[in-house]
Length: 631
Image (tube, rainbow, N blue to C red):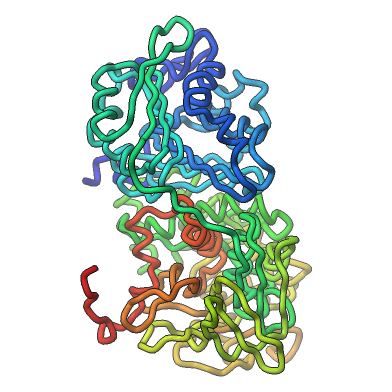
C-alpha cells in the first residue's frame, strides 16, 4: 500500500503540455477545456443546463447551494459558478462546491491556466492564494469572506466520494472524455452521484456517450440529449425525480459557552453563515483561559505512520495555515518553525518518520544543524524538521478579532453554573446574571466543559496544568527569527519579550505561578539550545509567567460533535467543541469548520474516517456504553 500514491501524504501533480498557450493533460492526452472558448463552454454546458442562474436568483437569504463535480482540473468550472453566484444570488446566500481531482495542477500551472480568463482574475487570485498543498485527502477552502466554500479531495474519485458526506443540488460531470479516462465514468462512480443527490438534483455533462446516459438513467435520473457546445453535436443533462427531499435548516440563535480559541472560532464561523450568536465566558475578555497566553506556536507533531490520527493532524495544520493569514492577519506571524531533534529518541523518531512517508517540501523538510541555525537565527546543536508555513500567533488578539462581528454578542464575567433544556431551547444559568436562552448551545469551555454537560456517565476528559515563562529578550545571547520546538518551545520576541514553556503537569491543580515551573521551563530550554540563555537568571526579577489548564481527552484527540448522554444518545441542539489540549491554535479552525457544517447541514469538512476520530461518543467510558436498540 505504501507505494500507492493515493496512500501517501504527497500526491503526484498533473503533467501538462502547453499547446498554443492552452493546457493538455500528458497523463490522459486530452484538453482541459474547449479550444474555442472554455469559459463559454462551461457556462453553456454546466450553468445553463443545470439552470443555475435562475436557481441562484430563487435562493432565499442564508440558503446554501451545493454543486458537486467529478474533476476539478484547472478550477475553471468552479470559478465560473462562483462568478455567476455572486452576480445572481442574494447577498447572504452561500455557495458550497465539492470536487475531486486525482492529478491536481501545481500552483504555477494553475495560475498560468487561469490567466487565460482575465474576467475571472479576482476569483482566480483567491483560489491560487488558498490552493492546497499537493497532499492527499480532503481540503476545505473558505473564500469570499466565508460566502463560498470549496471542499476539494485530492485522490481517486471513487475513494473521495465514498469518504465525503454531502448532498448536491447540481452536478458538473466533468473530467477527460470517457475514451481517455474511463475510470472517471465507471458504474460505481455513477452510483455515488445518485447517493449524493436528492429529489430535484440536476446534472449536466459535455459527453453524450450512450453508456454514461444509460447508467445515469438506471440510477433514477431522467436523462435527455441536447445540443452540444460549438462543433460538438450533443451533450446530456438530467434531473433526479424521486428521492429524499433536501433537508433544510434555519439560522437561529446560538449560545457558545467559552470565549477562547475554540469558542471564538465556532462563533465567528456560524455568524458568517447567518446565525445570531451569543458568547458567554467567565473571564473579563476574550482568551481569558488557556487561550490567553501572549504567544502561541502553530505546529503539529505528525505520527510516523500515515494513519487517521496523522491525517487529521495534517489536515488541521494545513487548514490553519490557510485560515490565519486570510482571516486574522494582524495576529499571525509566519516565521517558519523548526521541530528540533533535541534528543536521541526524537532524532530516531524523525528518521523513521522521513523513511516511512514522503511529504511535499512546501509542508515540511529535514534540516541539518547548520541550515537550522541559519533559518532560526540561533545556534542549533541539532537539525530537525522545518515547517515553512508555520509560525506563531497572539491568541488573545486572535480571539478578539474573531469575535468582532455584527452577529456576535458577548457576555463576559458570566460564571456559568447550570445548563438545562427548557421549552425546546437551552437555558444557561450564571451566578448573579440573567439566564441566557438559545435554540442551540455549544460547550467550548475547555476544562470546565464537563461540569456544564447536563448528562450522567463518565467522559474521558481531563485538565492538565501548563505554566509558561516570559522574560525579556535581553536574557538571550541571540534572538530567534523562527519558532523552535523540542524539549520546550521558543518564540521570536514580541514587544521585547520572549515566551517559552510550557510545563505538562498531570494531576496538578495549582493555579498559581511557581518558581519550580519556571526553573523547569528554563532548564528545558537550556538543554535544547545550550548557551542561548544568558544565565544565571534571577527568578524573582523580571520573569513573569502564566498558568492555564488545557482540556484533553484519553486519546489526545479533539472533540467536535453532538452532546451525548451516558448511553450514547444525542441531546438535540447541544454540541461540544473541546479537548483541543496544547494544540488549540492548530485544531480550532478546522474543528469549528466541521462543527458548523454539522449544525448547518452543509457538506462536511472531514471525511468519515476522520470524523470518527473527533466524535464525542468515543469519550464515553466503555462501562457506561449500552447497546443501542435497533430502529
